[in-house]
Length: 177
Image (tube, rainbow, N blue to C red; front, side, top):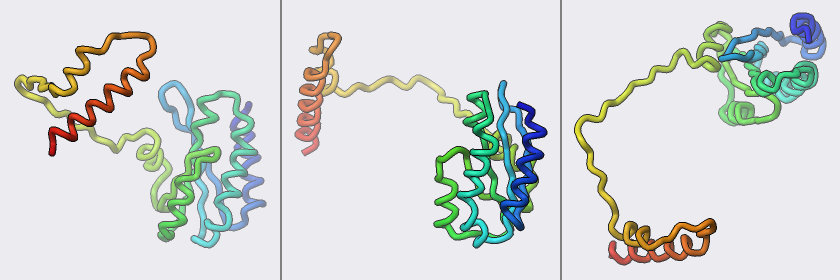
């Protein structure tokens, strides 16, 4: 599939179908694959509310269906860029929709590069490691260890484990009274 000519056709169709909105595309390399990012500029919350489902369907039909690579098909991001804040309900509804692509509401002033760095590449994340110093001895629960000593390993322990679990729960309840 020639992505560039397809993207050009999609953008032309988008302008006709979604008047007042625009669509931009950028691919992002992630590990050994490509993540497809669509950025649609939406003029208002009302337009977003009325069109977000249709825009998602548009990308799914015109682009996603034409992808052969499984990784690429499941790594499509649709960024709805809007200048003003929107209601929490609409924000939640859009970002929790799981059909076809990951949908994210973004402030229109953010650059595409910053959006990709933050939401796809996670370049804005910092990870602090914590070092545990000294020995921390394992302290076992005597109630649990008593039952584990008596269990024989078999292929199917279902009923035996269930019975033991019930006994453990009873002992713990009784010991905490």
